[in-house]
Amino acid sequence: ALNCSSDAIVPGWAFMLISTKLQPYAKKVVLGSLEDLETTLFQSIIEDLDISDFKDKPVIIKGCSNKPVPPNAYLWATIKLQPVAKSIMYGEACSSVPLFKRK
Image (cartoon, rainbow, N blue to C red):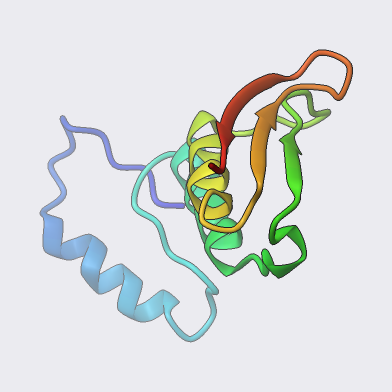
């Protein structure tokens, strides 16, 4: 991850040049903070996720995790699952919040 603050004097094309040098070695290049990189990685993983096993099934998106999860990841998971899931809930099985139910 390349960190670029708004007060930097580095021209925008410089980051493009750096990315051309990183391309043979990096799987992904992100301009921003470590948080931006982690968010981008979560987005890529969710986009590539095979959700066929969730077709017509109730799904609970667990909110607690031992590792930090970007808030956008929950949105992307919901959007990805909505076309196939019978229902989507958030939380734990004993106290889940209903978010979506197919009619």
